[in-house]
Length: 306
Length: 209
Image 1: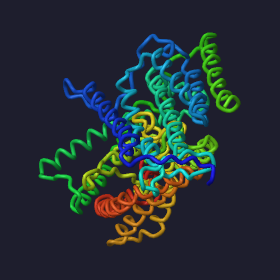
Image 2: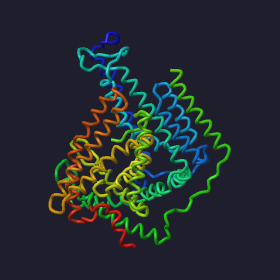
Image 3: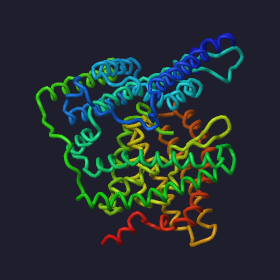
Image 4: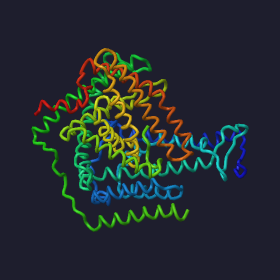
């Protein structure tokens, strides 16, 4: 423990150095959430609680990229980014993702919504890790006033920020991956890559009935509200919610039968028609090559140079 | 809580994919292949159920329902949960795409165990199924919380503090989940008991043959 650098700070600096950044990040996130809510605000009755996938219309480099190449490249790249250890390459990965975001011209509101979705989990690391990371040789520790029990380990901060950067870098790529082609085409690409066709069929069916059941649930809950139900922290609420779930399952189960009968009546024999004709061109492979080279450079930077 | 991208070591994410992949294949084989479209539709219902928030003091929690899913779907539960988590990741970014395998293990294994336990001990009538339902509801969430902590700890000793915190955050959910599961199972026993039969999603099939 002798070579641990510990810096004692006056107690009043605790809010300035630690609480202020946390508060400003929280405020920024609240602002982003507000923006994404306002941006998606209903002019007419528009429901964003289950966000729709884009129809994938567009002419950017990513829109015209062969969907198989796109899936393979972005997935490999995501795993490469997830395996980074150091902060600098992780920040480079964020920069690369931002560049791709700019090229693909996808809806920024949805990108922001995705970032908001990961904030809760990631801020858990940002807040806890500086205090909980064990102190090793060569660490720098900030101690505020006489609060010796709450040592603020800068290595923990570095670790948490690296995790956050990697998470952001990968999350930024999800819209370019999913919104630059219609969902059925993306899933078709997946099945042409060898994933069993049943997987993409099941995703399509669940996605479609997700909206049906959400409307069903909202009808049921407006019925409950009309009858005077208000959510509170008590047993009666839990009972009502449980009956609600039970009813949702019963209705859904009965619907599965009707859905399946209707599909068979329309000639369903275990497969859907292909949505598009895929063709692989030279430029698709070049783009894959360029991107994967960038990913290789990232990992080399991470493992060899640092 | 769903693990996002960039948190777990790559060996764990890839290992999670491999094990989940095998369990998904096993789960799909256990459900008749022509029943898979129905399972997809049921998955949508469980997905919607997991979006329901319950107020808890100043904040609110949402249900995880691995126990209920296991009780209703049996061995098909793993496939259903993996599919639901894939959709959650694609739609909401709850849970990263690279961590999908690990997230599926975290929710799917408890569902399989709970489903098996429920079929084994549910009994025939009275309040017993509801009590067992409540127990597996709590157990499912407890197991999911423990799996989450174990997965986080795979990152090394630096992750220990976060893992403990994540485990503690699940305590209120464990209680709420148990109570809700008990009531839901009690409701289903009265209203539609065939939903709780083993392989209920398959058994209706005989009518078509």
